[in-house]
Image (cartoon, rainbow, N blue to C red):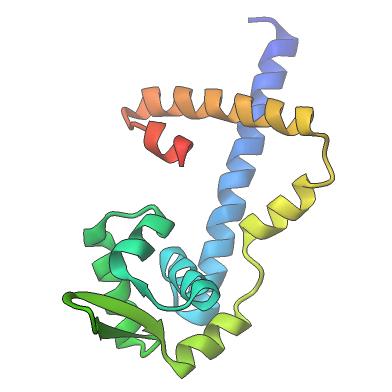
Length: 157
């Protein structure tokens, strides 16, 4: 491999490591400051923005399985941030709503990393954004092959 290519690959891998580290650091700070995991924070944000939802609706919006959403909601309920209420039209369905404490916490959460990313990407040209997205999909394909993980579902959603 020539030296220029090797350097370019090294810079790309370092940038990916920095990206992963930044996301991890942001999540760790959220855990330390609010005592919440990333999925718990996102569940609160969604409920704050959209109001009362069923657990199935929330799981679809968070891109997690129904069994995972149960654990997330159980922990938020223990922290008295959400309430489960029975759907008056179908008692088999529990609806999720924020408590007053959950609403206050949701309002105080910092702007998500993803929102800041989107805001900054708005300054870029569409072709540049498409190129970056295409290249990231290629990298995800490589990583998923290496780790034997199917990223196709996560990439599409």
